[in-house]
Length: 409
View (tube, rainbow, N blue to C red):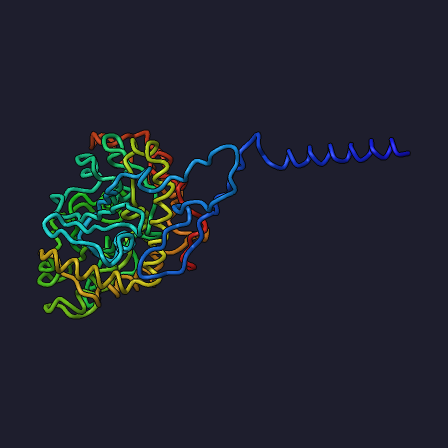
């Protein structure tokens, strides 16, 4: 009996030693789990998604853990974002990334600062006169320092053959572009009503939505006038004009700021024509998509969170935008009241929402493909920049979006 007892005890000790050895993980390294980014509470400055944080310290093992990569490891530094006009609330989410303490270079039209304490410098560039009124997608390919740029979907389609870009984030669910008129002249209820009226429609030359409206027969070639230069003079002095604008800008300015008018205008969104582009979608050069994939995986959620922080608490950045415009000291003017009206309008009209899926920034393939199917036949043969075989999958990707980041409406 004593021999059997000693054998049993020895066997149990051996089993215990084997179990302990298996538990040490000496032959393989445990992989720490990275927490998914979570939506943070809106503040005056944008919170960094948790994906940019260093992982917590873990127990030492026989193999050395590779340190987590930071934004400065994988992104251009400075990271330059080209916008399409002067600083305004439509760009508020981008200026939110820098925060209220950024530095203005009035000559260059830039606003820059460090993102949080990451070491990453972010520079936001104004468009318009600061890039010779060139469209951002063209500027993109003339200046390799630019990493991201605002590009409308129609522009991305038209230029894909020569300056291909890929949308990675869209702040707008519906674009703010409008046609507006004097309610004392017209009582339009549809774009067809505008066409049937024969009213002169004043717009910026090259506008893709006008190509669409004329091609569809909604407006006629002889009623559209592409000589609009942004000045209110003709709208004020000529009876019966219809003019392009932005729901976030002109209706407020004409009623409150333009002394020669100072009364309401009526308008319809171009989006409802329907012409459903993704307005000012943040885009990357197609050739940069793969080399900077790790950067986009980190930075696109930062843009999403910046949009949430801005649109839920726009006051601080709206005030800073007004200060920046005044520091630029150019022909463009602004007011805090106008900026606050713009951010309110973006919410009230449903221009910025979570859409149907509960998170911000995404785009729909079917919507983009419908635009391609409408626009390619209009433009084919008329521009060398068009690739007639372009598809929605060429133009956009939702792969870098964090589906947990939501505005809540």
